[in-house]
Length: 261
Image 1 (spheres, rainbow, N blue to C red):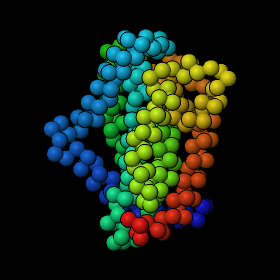
Image 2: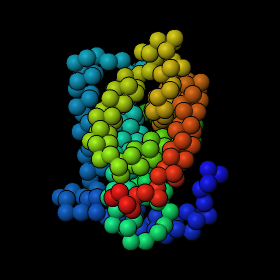
Image 3: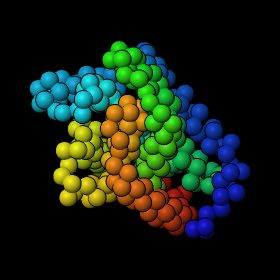
């Protein structure tokens, strides 16, 4: 399928584990609080967004305490944004390894994407603490949480397959990604409920894959407002198209990586 040798990728899984484990160890090396940053970042963002958008802007939160409303969206958003930014840089970062030995290049962006699940898992403890504080119990919808985590990761991987390959030739791409993620966040229901979007624009809004992911994640974690499954279906369709195109494009240009890096 798409001329991708999946057996070759599976055979190289030990290299995947090596890249992922090395990145995890170096991420918080020589920091004062180490993995505590995985808690500090969403905690500080939630506090600032609560002050600005809840207390000052009076943003509605569908009956959910705003800190919970914001954090339940910030966790999947951070998972997506960190995965996208690190995966985009990953091929160039591994340039010395690419020049020395042959291995399936797809392993590089895949490892850079999926390693961020560790930070997401740590952040979930913070959310669980807030849920206890606000006496919000999860419902049966919690069983859908892994589904939305996978969609968020696949969305990041789909986009980063394009961007990481382009970044090898055009290093401007790495500078554009932080701006792209900022604009994308405000186009997603991170700080506001998607119910503010007019019904006539719902399907168009669903073209943003993270809109469905964030609404689904809030429902799975907090169980208050069921998501718009049509919007999630549209989001999933967009993700699959991006992934198929990204795999084909990455496969076509990967043979030039060693010469361009």
